[in-house]
Image (cartoon, rainbow, N blue to C red):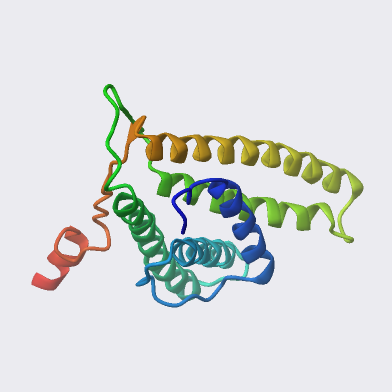
Length: 202
């Protein structure tokens, strides 16, 4: 990336997520890479796969064994999704390591990686709500409600893109400092989840 790598990046991220959703991102390779676009793809892929698994869990004919298997996949994908948010933030920390914060530089409660995650989920909502708005087997009232929801989400997406771009510009200019906020998820860690480590002692 160039010295002005952040210019227009937020808009590009939203465009990438839309393209990947249309193309289908149910499968993805390892998150071990150094390219920001690839990291964002990996993160979006986990969200897309989570979306599809959540649908399976709510199918009326899903029996207990199916729901249990889906729950385990959801836990795994959700852990990967959260890990990738932190990997994206780590990439940005390295990219910004030579930026000297200006006096009085502020911190942001939400990291860029978290905003990327929100944009990813919003891209999925827009895509699947558009499908509902185009359903030939649904009543026009249903399609109209879905079209209105799409318009609302597009408005929210524009605001979120603008906010992310402002944050990136502030970080590059030193007006804000980049911080990594670790999530320390406990439920997937065998040493921290009592339902796991106590079961092993029985």
